[in-house]
Length: 416
Length: 203
Image 1 (tube, chains in turn cyan, yellow):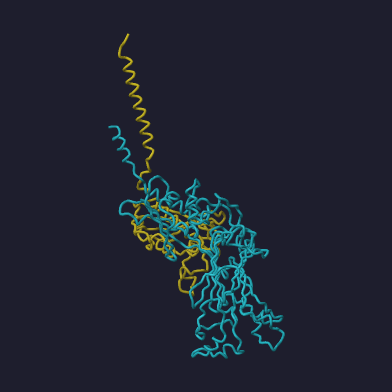
Image 2 (cartoon, helix red, strand yellow):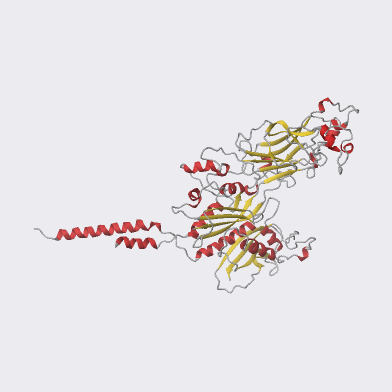
């Protein structure tokens, strides 16, 4: 009799699914997660096995980490002080399908009951949808909450001859003393003094976390359009029918001559009046250098760096970094797209500076034998094939960098 | 001297023990009581949603722009407020997850702005601080007084009144600032914090 009395008591308890959904949404939208480093942007904090940003790791690392005694919690805000403002990197990691339902329950939903759940984040500007759940919403009873959030975007800089004519060094190369150096460099400078402090230069306050350009947290992208920055390195795909099967194959002048005069294109004599083979501009290397111009090995340090080389006539290829041997030919219409993420604090904090250095050269090298002072030499021989030169400041100037705008979104949590 | 007195005490002791064990069992067994769901949950959800919408409307998109809500208040643009608050956010139909009836199509909003100014007209010799309010956005259906409603508020930092940027009230340039809705004349042209109050109810 007594046990049946107690069973009746047990039966009368019901789970408040709405409360569980609310709790889950609060963790997602008002908490930066755990482990996390609560420091101002750009302030150096040493990291170790238990003290790091959870979103700086890979899913497989986190899966091992949560098996141990250490606590892992999936919070998505950019910092402790910015509820409802979510980090793109945390969103990408949390919605990674690598995490199982059991792991999501252990590190987000909590409780002993194996709840079913469905978490959906919708970006209102792009209608992009992220979903993580054990299935669609059930027919029966479930708890639900909707939260409105802002999503911090990554930044990017796009450099072309049209947007940044100042980086076109044609005048420099044509003005005595002639600069016929064999290599040309272009830099993109990321300086903690510009990034973490007020961009107007007064340097009185730190840029707040939701708006800061922080290479240690957010991806940095540089899109370099070579159209207009190359000199006489032009291969007109219409006039030049021979395929370049491999970037290692250099320009074949005789083959080009044979195919030059095609109907509908300017004759060879117009394109290249001096009858001089248009040697290639080449990308020699992409390097990272610190304030003292010492090279930084970002990839060994744990940063994520991808370079893609976009050729309008072929598929995109991924480039290896640093020394390109043999050099990769570049031509008009090419784009070099570089993305950096997870830059370690050792290389990026308030007083650190990191430059992305693109070095261009040409192949075959013709300049050393040319005397710029000799009028008998054709001027086009001592103008380098790559005309890009200078340093782009990656900062809060909208003319240089697409700012980290906050995009509205809706987070929905259902629990059953 | 043998009798049954001790037996009675023993039974009493056992009975007391059973009661104690039962009590302990009940106490321990009832620890898994969850908060019962009640009608306030939906009110809480609506209040949370309203507070969230005001918060993200009042979050500037980047370092170079004022927040949507500040622009709306500075230009007194009730139509834009209703479009953003109600249509873009509250009633957003583009939700990818399963359709739900929790925030149905029957939520009515009324927005009011409260501000502070110094009254120098009524008694010029003795100016008095006054708190004044005006309606930013009218409800589609008037409030009958009986529907359950919730109220959310947000203090908005407004740097200037009647800003020349009237792009929100005039989508096709060139815009005539005179056509833009204006704040009441008593709003002083100075940086100030104004209280936006939104009352929401289910009609």
